[in-house]
Image (cartoon, rainbow, N blue to C red):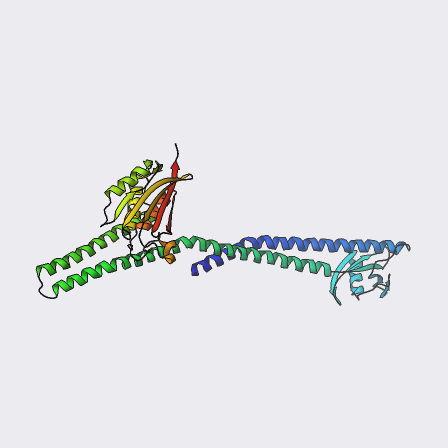
Length: 388
């Protein structure tokens, strides 16, 4: 979380540093435009006042005077007088230079422009408000400041989001590793506890040969379970790491199912092949055989009879594994393909179903599980089919 804040803050500051020069130049240019507009307006008012001075038919602009700084008198040219400028000082400057511009404050901000009249001590003084210019400059500054702030905020927010997206796979990988270690420890704890308890029980005192044999049998069974779990863990880790390479070739699923049914023996469970269609898929023989074997053994662990069948399902090839066991717990049926999840109370807690799903998904297929109305459960997997 702290790293995301650092990245977001750095991105926001960098964006502000990159955009600020453009904002400053933009604000300066806008201020120059506002000054040019004010000067043009003052020139237009002065031109109108000059015309009114020599032509009575032209109305003088507001805030205009004829001023004689030598004799110290000022005559307003209009009744529209809104301010009291420093008339004599402006007029003195105009007599010396021909024209003078002075800005002053009196109930607002103003600009006084004075121009001397040739051959006389008279000057023409016109005053215009600078309020529009000041407002334009202030608005421009705030607008550019807002643009910089908004761009920086958006950049920081984007950096925050992208940093989170970038960290998400890492966090997910960490979570997967944590869960994997916890699941592995949970799966190995039971057989290791059995081994420890049986060994301790056998060594506690002298026992008969039969008692030792019984303890060794328990230890062997627990060790085999632990070894099987370790093998599944390593295999699952290999699939999750993307280290499995597919050797694709045409494969008759119906023949593969018959092969698994004939070669699989689980206690007194009967594994048969039901009516099937000749279905060909592009798949890795060894991996798909492992899927069928895992599903068949998982079903046999909770049932007395398991039926395997193959058929077309639209554009997919479908393999069904149907058993007559107690079915899946309703609350767990959506999780039977997750690692270390039991679909019922009699099945194993290994990784067979999770490995099967991973292999099927590597072949662009999917797995399904459901309870059968008449009792039992059906687990299926579907692969893209090749129709002749």
